Image (cartoon, rainbow, N blue to C red; front, side, top):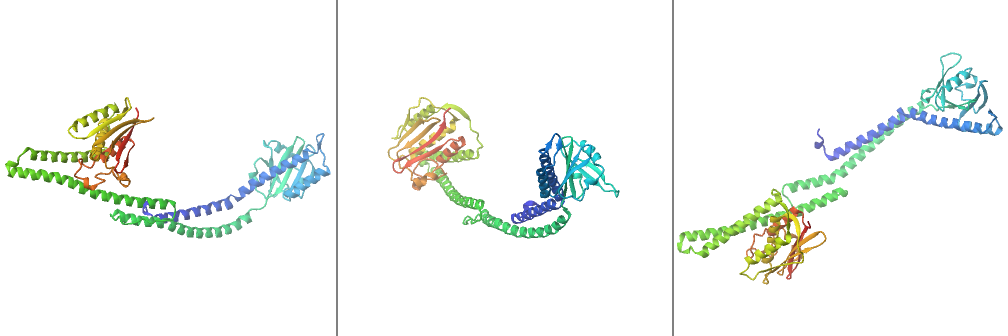
Length: 486
């Protein structure tokens, strides 16, 4: 079965069971298989430290190279032997005699009875380590076969014998009994079996509860998302349980609200485009039919109406195409360095000439001597034209528009200010949307296609420039955008 065909609930269930099984297996391996190795390693380290402690105590009692078994030393070594359940042997070179035995005899080595001390001494001198270990192999002979090794892991008996040299005259051997681990391992097998059963049962219960708890809100959200995919936007996501689900829930609810707004705007867009296309087409068709049927109606005035409506229709189509190209980013920006102040001067001059016969007045206000920027010059020109056109349409009776060029540490700021009807606060975030109009009654009374601010928004965002609007109702509006200084 493919992974993407398994639900999250069952994935969590299997993962928890596998994790529990791995814990049980790891526990069994360490407690049964490796217990003996761990025990011997720890015991070896302890007897090494014990041997070192014994030699340190003996060294304190040496005089003229000879060991003096004082009462204090004897008591101390007996105490060490008792505390660690180990026998301590001291051998003197040459004589191969036992100087002293401290503590109970371990009962396993019988070192004090063997006649191979000299052989042990010679073998131990060849061991290139601080400590050596003695092993007796019983081959059913009256005497034990003696082995001297440097690795305690070769010891297989139930005792551990560690030795070291004290200068060159004495050899110290510590004999410690090992606790058999086989009975403990046997008992642990049953203990681990019972523990494993309990852990698996608990893991199954926890897995079921966790998988249900985690998957339940996701299943709920998925069902709501399926309804949303079918076009039902009258739903609310109600997934709960943990932070990520709550955040996803909030995001999807916000998406629903935005989709509702988009659907409303789409309906308005279709209605507005249909209206704006139908009106000029109706006028063109009507006047053309009238002029065809009544030749006397072929006048300059009627022809001008057809020309004006054709231009209006052409402008609408061009704006729609321009907006579509910019939004899809199919048209690359042609970035060049140019003087923004000179561009503003040229635009204001052309606009004033265009409105020469009207009461429209456009002013350029700036203290900047020159303003070099880098952008697509034709697109920025389109932005400024659209801002000025929008300001004229909503400037009211004053028909005064100020184009302002300012500068701060990093940017040039272009502002287009009118003194007209202004915009209410609740409308400010929507004015950049296609066909959105603050006053629906102005739809035909104002010039333009209703796409100007949308085109401005797309151009400036394509460039990565900041933009915005400040407005006070019945006082006026100031639209602005920023361009980095080059």
